[in-house]
Length: 130
Length: 147
Image 1 (cartoon, helix red, strand yellow):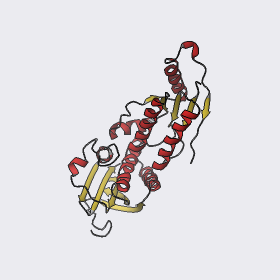
Image 2: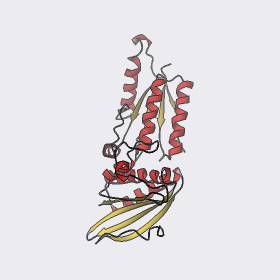
Image 3: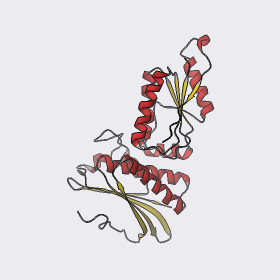
Image 4: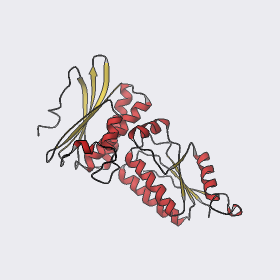
């Protein structure tokens, strides 16, 4: 328990790959009984409406599976573009980097448990490489 | 319809310096178009934010071509108008066409499963935007970003 999943997206994903990640991640949340998902998109040079929607779907599905999602490392140029595109990524928690994202996850998860119940998170790496 | 690209209207003063064409038949092709547009934008000397905006617009339109047009082509032109240079992208399909362009351009409207941001978002991310569509014939969308 208390395990977090760290997903690092390292490739320019085509749409089917993005959907595969979505499916893969939800099964891993259940398998590892994860309480949190950290998605590192610092390597992504572009987030369009498809990838934005995928991030939103992951956040909603994780939430139904009792896990919090935090998206970290968005490049400033990507953030500027998303706003102009009209995509506000409502319902998605973000943090500047993995460290801050981890802190966000820990406080979110411990806020839902007894304080004594909160144990340090273990991280399993689910790097997604094509 | 006239042969691919032959009928592209040149606006007065806008010269095309070079072109590259791509087929859009699969999701992988969308990635290829994104990467080709990024490369062209870098070679033109666009800043990182401008590059990102235009690549994102290209991705939205390429996906429209695939998902709604049933596939088609993308053409990347380097253009010049006097001392100004820029990149123009033209996406063409022979799909069902769009009956109501005004409705299709509206934020949040979608005829499929998307978020309805493709056309309107691509327009906001570009300096110039042009769309032509005929029901039963196809759709051509063109965007331009000046340096």
